[in-house]
Length: 189
Image (cartoon, rainbow, N blue to C red; front, side, top):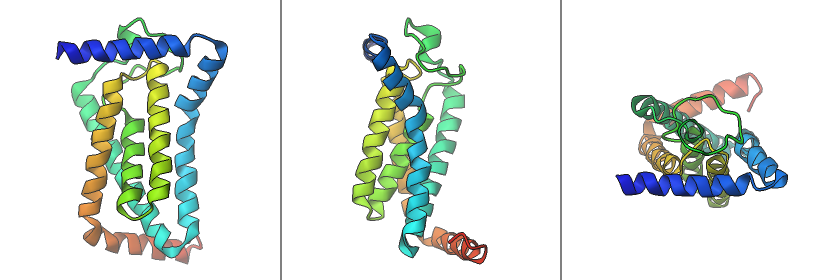
């Protein structure tokens, strides 16, 4: 366990030092860690508007994201690991409330959506979201708000959430169809 904690801290400090090495890297890390996540709703809305089949894929991804977020919150509140900027020499490049660090909510949600897209046949889109998850996870480490193990735990939570939604696809199809029919009635689909 000590090895993992030392590994976590070494990578965190190394990436954080690189991020604060210049104004440009600080700005790039801050932007990526804080704002790239907003591409996810754009992707989901675009998918919703694409076709009837894509609407179900968007809903599956949204349900996977919701489950991953709930799982991450429960685990995070149970473990209550302090953020790196609170307990190490890492500089906080991105302002963040001192909430739990483990697992990363961002990583959990992004990896759940990426795997959901993959499992339901949208592989190119899944690769895009997977790369986005890696970039955001890496920059959140560099920004001093997560340890590398927080991101890896988010990956695991995301995988589990996506597979649970995939396993429940039959019963959830009724809910997806109902949501789409309601959206059509109010002219949102």
